[in-house]
Image (tube, rainbow, N blue to C red; front, side):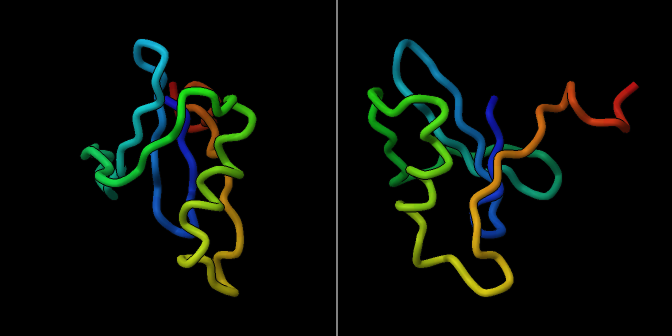
Length: 80
């Protein structure tokens, strides 16, 4: 799963059968389907952050002005 901080909200995106699927990730790590978040299959992985920024631009604020790709869990230093 590719994880993003979308103006303060964590969203995960996965590729399933050629289509992108998005989920909202809660503080405890639980996932729920992200209704209304449709990412066309032609969007490349490296374009996902820009696409999510365009989709959620009204959620931007001076304190959270960007969409950031979060490190994979395998990249975290606190993982054993």
